[in-house]
View 1 (cartoon, helix red, strand yellow):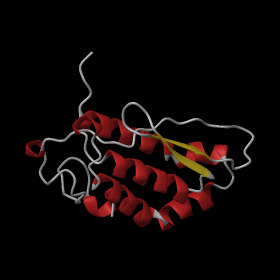
View 2 (view 1 turned 90 degrees about the horizontal axis):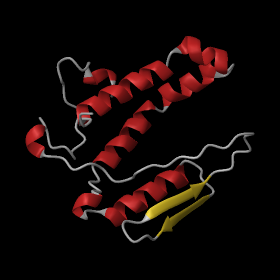
View 3 (view 1 turned 45 degrees about the horizontal axis):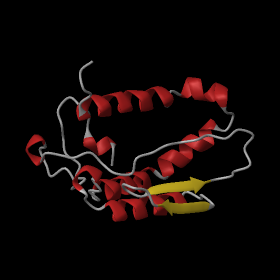
Length: 147
């Protein structure tokens, strides 16, 4: 099996997001879909800004770079998302983050997430990789529709 490139990963992620955003599928799952979609549109800029802030923090475990800052950022994101308990967990390697959220739902979801990012070779980028700038890339859509 060939290794997954960053472009392959991003393409698959975008395709997954588009699939999940299909209104006809979601409407059957929730009668409140219009309110949910309105909230997504309303808070789009906030979400983009949060992602840009995250990209600007080059927390790269493989380079022993900004691990504490990355851990603190992940903890802050969890707290801002409403998690009731958020803790830094020391390990033999980089610190982990353990957070719990009880929203009173009948089902519980577990999630493992890496807060550090992949190393980046600036020579492979058309702009500095940790700048989080919007750039036009032919064949990948119009950046103005993202902002």
